[in-house]
Length: 216
Image (cartoon, rainbow, N blue to C red; front, side):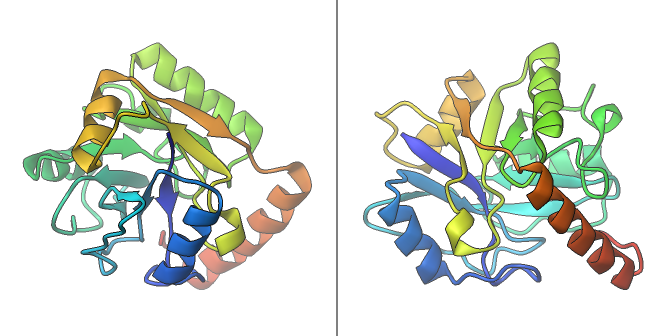
């Protein structure tokens, strides 16, 4: 089963797609599960669909970079340290995933992933360059953590560009989390191309500067 575990809706400050558009696109391309991981909020939840498994989540801006949280019920506050953020996720019974660790303006960097109690590493993000994804996959292998994949889509056409492959017998969000914990998953999909990366990087840096060099 293909699941996109990193999607942003218009409830994120930089997202441009509605929940209805995300669901429609996910059905069109045959996704079995999705996680809408808006920046520092869970305003789209509760979210349910009769055909697609929904794994509740959000992308949290820590003091050192972005962390993906899954199967939580309440938003985790931004701006905390990595260890505290992971603890807050685990306190809710959720799992913590190091998001795109080698993205220089929002990734945690290797030093903030090693030795932390992460449950997985996002090893394939379709908005990251191939070299960053390769390093993330190598990091996951070296520290013995499962590797996830997600599109990081902010527009509808990008949904499903990178996914996590799950066993077909997963029936609900809890089954997805169990599979992640077991490592019974694998990332699949594409990275960002060089030309696309240049345009994206330029836009992102300009937005970052306009925010006063503050992470989303």
